[in-house]
Length: 113
Image (cartoon, rainbow, N blue to C red; front, side, top):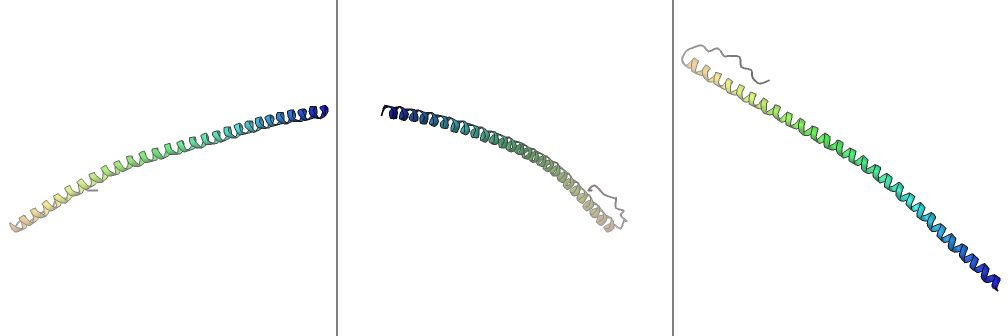
């Protein structure tokens, strides 16, 4: 019976050591998994930051292009209205000249391109 108690104690000791070893192996494996997941998440975050920066740069370029286009359109509209006003003035002068019995020669007006 003493031998049985010694063997039982020995088996329980081995069992305890095995449980501790398995816990350490699982802890080590979990730590490695966590490290791999953290590395992948860090890489994905870096990739997203790069894409976000590229998107911000694209938006800035689009805003700059929009402002240039707006300035060009404003300039073209101003030129168009100046030319239209000059043509109306010439038409008015032609009408006045013809009413007075004079011949009118229109000037070449070209401001709007």
